[in-house]
Image (cartoon, rainbow, N blue to C red; front, side, top):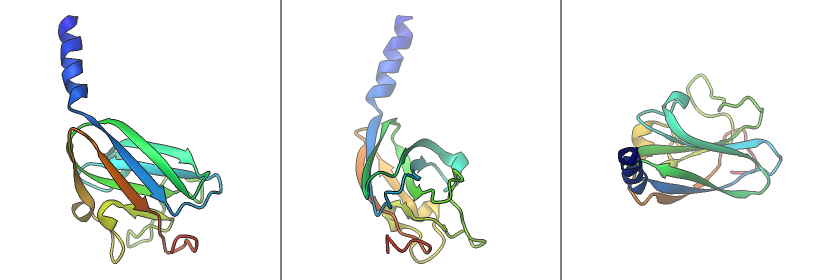
Length: 138
């Protein structure tokens, strides 16, 4: 039993917190989602995530005990309450969104463009929601 606790301590010591400050939010009570994705920008590839009701134009999300790796950070405001980011047939987000490295501004967002390194100490990030259907965040 003590061996299990020893290894658990090692794992948590190498994982850090990722703080994501999201601005450009319309404070209307709809949910804002933030996720860390590995290898792809698909919900199944996002192992860390959090959502909160939009109560301010800027909100902070803290994802705890994130293992060091390359991730893409995705955020969106779920304006229609579907629980997922609506996209056009071309894959372009239709709700206010943001990706790390400001990916997706001029073409469909990809993991390769959005990917960032998160080390053992974690990372602090800032994202601004924007979108083609969102007049409040342009």
